[in-house]
Length: 188
Length: 113
Ligand SMILES: [Zn+2]
Image 1 (spheres, chains in turn yellow, blue):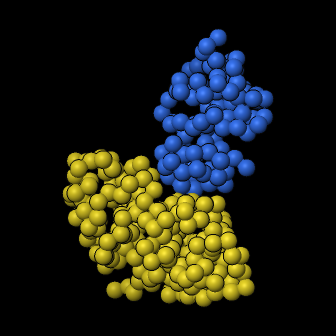
Image 2 (image 1 turned 60 degrees about the horizontal axis):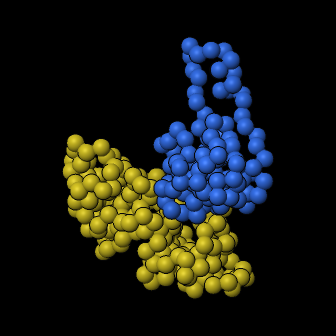
Image 3 (image 1 turned 45 degrees about the horizontal axis):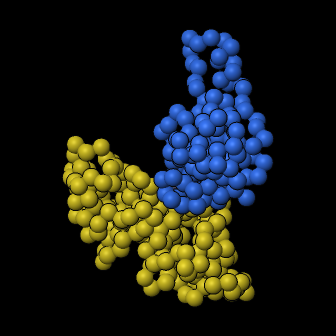
């Protein structure tokens, strides 16, 4: 068997915030009618959460569901269960106009923790990240410097960032640069 | 800098999160059409000083296409609306009329005239 590793293999950097490769994360792209009952039931079975509202993520122990577009969710599940859960979703959504795809190995996943977390992300993204505008549970797809990314704020004040695996090393370098110890701006 | 609200996400997207898609509401003339119609479809575009209708894509976001009505002189945005329409919705036309009475663009115009 192959030994799966992430693009940046556990890399970590500490400055005004701590940037870390979160490790392998099961991710399933689910497209379909988000108002459909069978879809809601399938999402619940796979992740333990309801279908999230526009622009938000619902996180529970061992699973999460994020709103990607009016017809797309990103489901987070344990890495080892991604293949099985994708198959379960496909089975549960038979007859629905829907598609589930395991994209776990196509993505990189980082976390930004510490007091400077908000600032690190704000430096590289054209999103209003002020504490009033971006609160825990908010989920946003946008741009971080030159690459597309999605990110959200956890209840504990840390951010999670998802991007394509092909730009995983770029993302780690970018976040580390934005978190440089002498780079505090002090807006938040 | 241009900020457009994506009608699908409700996100106020900044220009770098978007991809410009050119003029809105073009009628396609394909194979079998008149040469002049085909020529106009390919090459003839509006270049207004004022009210304009455009297609945009929320590229660094939901990925969907949408429409925007804005003023090329002041960069004022009158509104954004879904891609699934052949013409601007009445609500958008009314907003433009309120700000630019007597406006016209291709076959669309201030309906109150
Ligand atoms: Zn959008």
